[in-house]
Image 1 (cartoon, rainbow, N blue to C red):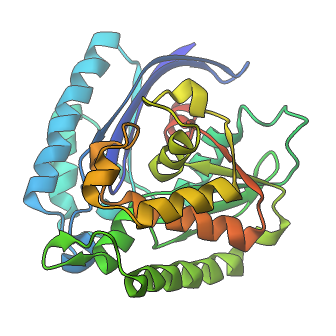
Image 2: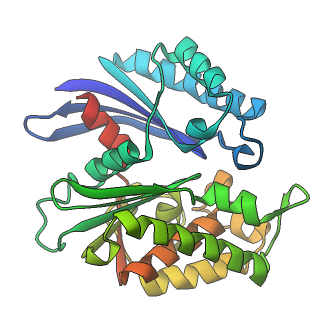
Length: 313
């Protein structure tokens, strides 16, 4: 067994996984998994730069992660940075800060690499199940981008497109510095138009219609699942591999779009950092399911973070 630490720094959140892994047998023992909302991508779509306050939030989380990694004596560490730091003009400030704190350089990976890690993390446990038809379509709805990957045991086609819950919220749901609550039909229509255009782009590379099992990843999907399951507190063991129907997703999306910030914040399973961006994230999930004709989504708590860990091992 190899003790590894994997860090996934996305547009909205930064996450750590520490695990003992054996690539030869597929054995996996999770030691620590945690997430902090840092909004690294705050304003990037508008300014092209990482905000100073966003960098400081991210570095604070890195300092916490560094302490955990030292305590558990992880043998190998890999830090992967995704959409926000890929786009930013001042990404070198981000790189230097991470190296100073964690001693490893963040790998600013491409959308295709991001998709590969997501597929591995999401499907490694599902490959032996007879109740799930192949090929899988893994959809990772992030803050700045969404990844689509089709494959059986291995990736056959992948595409990353620039629609995510933070990017769509900032582009269409913010007026005079505040999120519009609830969003107007015109603003919702604008988000839908962007998502449909992104799905058109994805279909140029990824045969979405060939998918037989849709696997959904990341916070927007797991949050919708938690609401659908009626959880009063977030319980990943209930959410992991839950099967949520299209009807449930449509109902929850409609309720979220009709709600105010205060009403969404009162739902206990919605993380405070997702209250403003969950509407856009739910819209992406619903649009994907409708486009591919999926009657349900299999929700996975194991995603790009787990794929990163396996790549280290």
